[in-house]
Image 1 (spheres, helix red, strand yellow):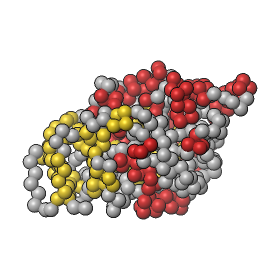
Image 2 (cartoon, rainbow, N blue to C red; image 1 turned 180 degrees about the vertical axis):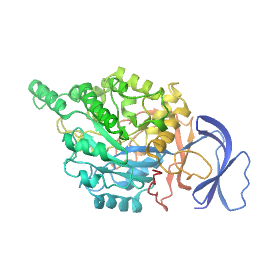
Image 3 (spheres, rainbow, N blue to C red; image 1 turned 45 degrees about the vertical axis):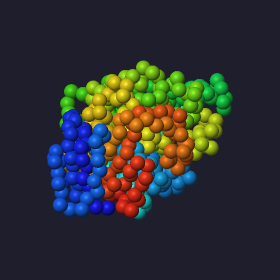
Image 4 (cartoon, rainbow, N blue to C red; image 1 turned 30 degrees about the vertical axis):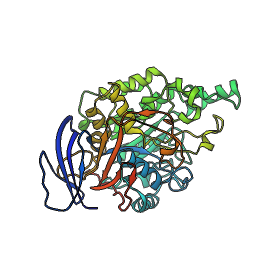
Length: 445
């Protein structure tokens, strides 16, 4: 594809904005300077008036391959991610079969090497029966261990206390947890079934998958991590109460316990269930306006370290079932960055903070090697943004295989115009160059 020279970009990186050219050669950022005149043949991009950001690293996606490819697959969803400015992702193990062995994990890496437009890593899944296999996971080649401390598909709920103690006490790499207490959820569900039968309104979802269920499980994970010195990362925090579990008095590099907030918990609240129904049915549930506001505060004051998507597509047919039958999750990778940029336009967050939470901090948290920053010598994973190019989400421009978005009808002020992955111009103004696939992420651990 050739080397790339980006001219006149406003670079947003490491807490600063500055005007510069940037030269990409053989996949890496070779030079950042105000005036660059390379001798080699180049692709030249005039970025005047635009902002150049490090590509986002999404630490939680469900791309549905293998086994659930009617919803999405690694090719379709990575393509949507790249169009949305996400250049690297970490995918979860609740595919079919569940990823409980090294062999099944490597099968996913093999699929991604042939199909993914973005860089990739995958989590090893834990169950009540595979602790020995989990503890063999290579910390330099795998994102982490995923533990569902709450209900999930297949056999992925880990509720055996001895198994939890074993994994937390012996794991050498990061443990990422989905925290909702299963017994609390089951008890709540029975109460609502007694009241409504099979016709439970979607508005009851945050009462069934309640604040208490979240806090009980999150606090257990934190207590186990503190007891054993485990490197713990709690995914998709959804309540204000859980914020008390996390520190903001030390830099992220020193934290052993970190937390993530997802786009949907920052954007939607329980007042949106009436309008969107099961389309915003997620686990953990979207909760109150107060929770939403406090999550943003937690993000800004560094109790929350990372912004992610929990991208989890389902078909509209599946979502249009009754509350008890409709699956939880929704597609988000294409619209995550522009949604955060909408908060910027509303004066709620700075560009520097968005970059910190979507690029720098995931790289630090997972110790991703040479990514997450615009630095000389780093892989050239970058996104060019036009902050003043309004557009509306509709069926014609949705790239997810499932064909829908909870943002349908939403207008955004900003647009991703170019995405560069490993020095390759993969996306440009709505068009893809699919000649080169992404790479497996490496971890400096």
